[in-house]
Image (tube, rainbow, N blue to C red; front, side, top):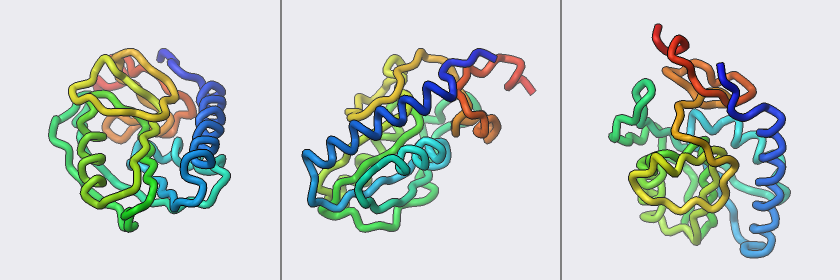
Length: 177
């Protein structure tokens, strides 16, 4: 197992991101309704810990997307659970665990734009720009990582490994079974 990002580094980065987001909201949208949307399932830990450090009142909701089979994208992005909150004229923060091809995020942004939000802001813990197929604008990035398959801290391989408190590169013997 090759640890890529330690638990301590993740926590430090969440504090840094939350400080930046708090400042951004207070400067740009001090009187607006803010909606934080968690992209399930991988973002749940990041979303929860980030949200606890946001100092203003926010609305929360969840969207569940499926786009991976094993270690690779299926290129077929499916919405398994849509949000239930009306985002019209609201500032929407989409909280992602990882952005690689951009396909999932592009689908979410397109879906949300149809609902007329005031703005859509993207925050991701991990970014793999070398894997990008569709160019998407990311406003807040935790870590830029190499094009390796990573698990832990919410990220999975066939629903396993999410509960590790750090992010690591999956070794061949861990997914060969």
